[in-house]
Length: 107
Image (cartoon, rainbow, N blue to C red):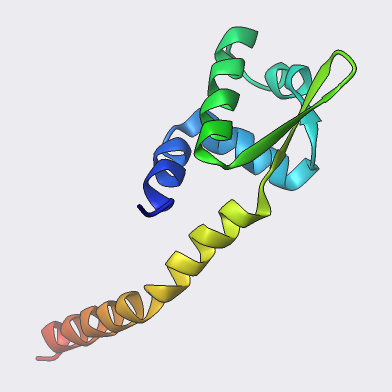
């Protein structure tokens, strides 16, 4: 089974996408720091982090009492490879659209 559906499903939620983007920008963060920047409760953040972890997007490690989260580069590489493999489709489609628009604009 492809690893893509769980990845895209997890990233389909705006809060989870924001968490991943923050981890990509700032690096490893503890759950409390992640929660402080979001307008949701700590238990809700924990649930979102659990979904991300189960999807394989983030890792969690314990450091004494803290739980630290980081993005798994392998997961992002999987998404990137899939996107790039479909680039030709999008380039071709956009070229056809551009030609159609130009044709419609020609008197």
